[in-house]
Image 1 (cartoon, rainbow, N blue to C red):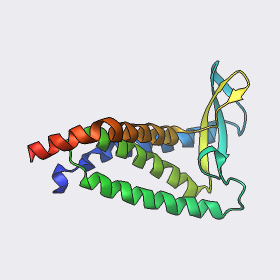
Image 2: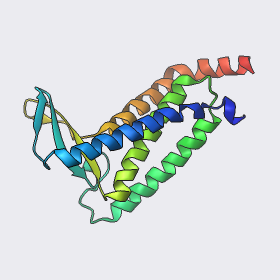
Image 3: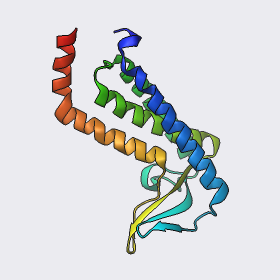
Image 4: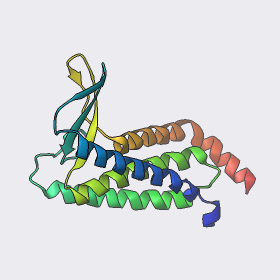
Length: 168
């Protein structure tokens, strides 16, 4: 497959996610005092937090080795996603979009992990006294992209594969 016909065209979406994510994290780190909630809506606060672990602060207190462990995983996943995008037909828009979202989010958080040693989170969702772990735009992009990948596998992959074969 030639690159001009691949889903690499979706890298613009990854770039937008990376730029927006890093810009918002820079703003949050510069403006918000650490750990203090700034209510925006009854269920949404802006709260600056640093996550040294992975999702839901997994391994956050592991002593420092997790920084490089998660960085290596993010680099590996990013390479796999780039190869997957390159091998995906441009006509598979849903799949291309989902891979680009996950890639952009992974690179946004990878930058934080390498440069700062932690990921900057600032979105806090809650209801009454129940709080969801804080997250950021990169986390949201990864989550939406992963959900789209699941939907693609369950509902679209067979029909898009058939359409792709017919067009070749």
